[in-house]
Length: 227
Image (cartoon, rainbow, N blue to C red):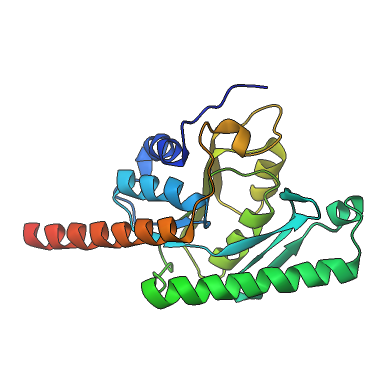
C-alpha cells in the first residue's frame, strides 16, 4: 500500500486550493460535504478568497462496513442507492428503507442546526465547487451534485484530494468538471491517504464555518473601501 499522501485534511485542502488557483477571482461558492469535507473546503475557500457553505449529505453505509457506501441522502429529500451494491451486501428493501429513513433524519437534524445559524448562501449564477476529503464510491457526492444542480449554478465542479477512478467516471456525468489531486490505481479507503484522519466533530465544523463567515465579511469591507 502506498504511504499516506497528506498530513491531515487542512494540509490537503491547501494543496487542493493551489491546484484550483485558476478559479481565484471567479464568482465561486465553495460547498463542503460535512463533516470530513469541511476542513478541506475551508482551506480551499481561504486560498481562493471564496465564500464557504455546506452541502448536507449523509452516507448510507453497509452493515458492519460503515465506510462502504451503498448510497446517500441529501437535503431536499434526494436519495441515491446503488441497488447492486446493496444486493451484494446482503440487505433487503426493508433494511434499505430503514437506513434511508435514519439517514434522512440525520440530514434534517444537521440542516436545522447549521442552517439556523449560518443560513444558505445563494448559488444561482455562481460556479459551485463541491468538496470532500476523498471520494470512494461517489454516492455522497452524487446526491450532493443533484441537490446543487437543482439550484442553478453557472457551472458545477467537484474536487477532492483523492478519489477512486470509478467514482470519477460516475461523477463525470453529473459535474462539469471533476478534479482530484490523486487517483490511485488501488483505492481501499479515503483514510489510508492521510496520516491524521481523526473524525471531525460538529464543534470543529461550527468553528470553521464561523471563521469563513468572518473572513468573507472582512473581504467584503476591504473591497468596498477600495471602490
